[in-house]
Length: 204
Image 1 (cartoon, rainbow, N blue to C red):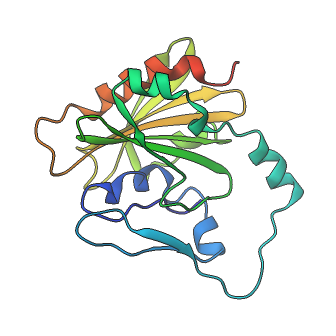
Image 2 (cartoon, rainbow, N blue to C red; image 1 turned 180 degrees about the vertical axis):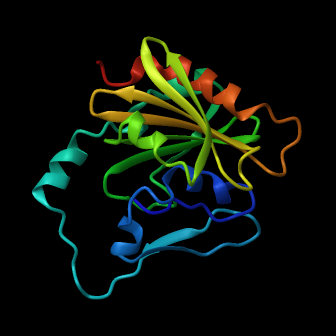
């Protein structure tokens, strides 16, 4: 997966930091996220070259084991302060092979909450030192976890808590909205959300 993007002032960095550079899928299949206006998320459409790209049986089997974060119960998501009506699958409607993504906006509209599931391990995440910093080992419930932040302009407004699951890891990301007032510390909020929702992750 190359890069998950939102268009718009606030959502523009919502998932970009975590997913950027992990895979070259978006470049390889010619996907582009296009269309921005007035700070609102744009739309995305695949740019095709006329040649189809078929996934190998191995990649299909691996993706089938990836947990779908959109399966989180609406009641649980609402209980942690999210607007269940804001739920969006994938990123700007684009499905990136190997990842399953679900996004919400909190009820106060101060941040975007993204849950991203993949087959990547915590050790693999820690190797992304050119893109992320502030690595901190955690326990979320009984699970091993890793906290980190993106390098660059999103460092102060975004944070990830990556939680280990049997088939890989699940990332909980909080991205504060640039225009929001009175926003909280993103790492503390990401930890709160992951702790509340860890019970719904695949059993060890």
